[in-house]
Image (cartoon, rainbow, N blue to C red; front, side):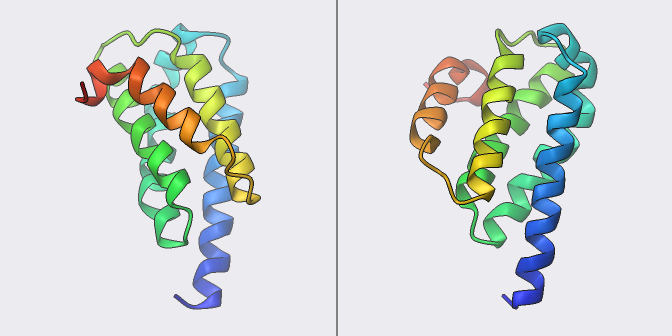
Length: 122
């Protein structure tokens, strides 16, 4: 990948993470996330594809999990504590884009365990 591609991709990934953060600022709980799920999912969907292409596979993994969760919410399912899960995930992605990926394993394990019913994992 060219340096220019990586620079532009990092800007786009950072922008999508920031937009998720802005959407979360308008939310105060799971009900508000349900109302904004389609808008948030557009950003997680983009992140799950773009982040790994620029060497940020951890962001892509978390975004992929969120994408599945948000699609479940969009289809009418109620996921417990989704607001907090997305907030924690967004904070991780913010940290990761600045090279702090220390919470990755714990976050991925927590999400996979708590939402296994929706993620298709046992």
